Length: 313
Length: 280
Image (cartoon, rainbow over all chains, first blue to last red; front, side):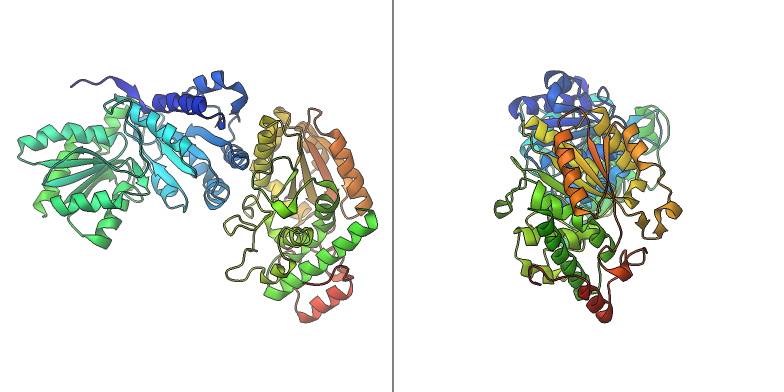
């Protein structure tokens, strides 16, 4: 089936607008990337509730925390690299530790940011954010899911890190699907292996399914769109059935989705596991497709990882 | 409250500070003593607040943020003496399980504290956000934030100063505790701050300069700031203070920035500070 290709950041832009229409307390800050974050429609419809901060992410993050005190629901918008690493201490002290209702919207995550190169291609942000107590970490997989996740984040009380990206990818989840924070999404039931994926890697994993089937492998595919809190129950239920795991993410192996799954398995039900992730290196310039291949984040890499892990059973 | 009454409160606050840092043998007495007069005047004379019914959102009230969180003994003493929580709780400062953490936090639910501080340079931004929230809510009350001079080294201070000036955040009063000392020594040596009045004025602020340890001047300056609010510019009280104010051997040096007095030193310090409202 052919799906329309749309960028997840546009899903955020639409979700923010919808959240703003539903709740007059929703406000938005942006550090000079309104176009990139697709926040323009919100800014146009709610000029009094949109705050252009200039290129000053630290100030933006703490202003959002200060505004959240009064019952507002602030979103901050910038690239994932500047939304996390640049302002880690601000998030840690005034958002996570102070438990303020700030939504950190982070676009252009991972190597699919493309030609700008490694300075902008953060691959460590999931780890940085999931380590913080009180922080919820959401990595939706397509346009519709990002839109619905944005609306869900606005309705949820507490700090949220919402990670999405730049490229246009197939928009395959239903437009009207309610996003439930912390609930893993079963995409394909199977018996031989469980693939846990997030973000852009979910579509890559879907594309792997026909190939696996041809090879006689009946794979289960679960979209872990909420890295934290992790749906431990769904993870363990699936693994009890399939007895081996592949994780797939556009992130460092250290600190990412695979790392979270590995922790659950090690503590509860150790089974063979392979991780499709970036292996302790920085990215580089290139097209998104080239980079996904170069860093072994593509569909064939998932297929290979599945074959390898099944042999280890 | 008249000036003499405010001075009597400040004297008790200074006693509390000495007893708190002496009690747990840690904490920051120097800056706490120096900023006491500023925050005493805010809480006991200037701010419209309801300590008996602390609300996180500060709606219909003035709000205060402490950016230089390490002078928490001063903040805690004033909150307790003003009625936010029992004065007896000051004895738990920095002890395991206390709501009076080394640096102020919200995690333990201490009334009067709205956000964590301690990592420096962040409070001005928080205050700007809170001030903007008041504007959205059509709440004419003011937001006050106390900053240290050492933390003016932080780049984020100037992000926030630029924003507040550019966006005309005129319900915001910054107070700079300008004691000219930081941990490693005089600010002139560690990082020369240059002309702070000119710097803030260049960022679009109205600056009011005062002796921050002269209670009359503090009250006058705060009154002037209140009159100057809502006129298109953020306000800064450039308050010249003396680290260790009120205790002779703690003044004129940065040595007491983060050092507690021993038994003998504490007794000496307390002998210089009148017990006006009863020790906790």
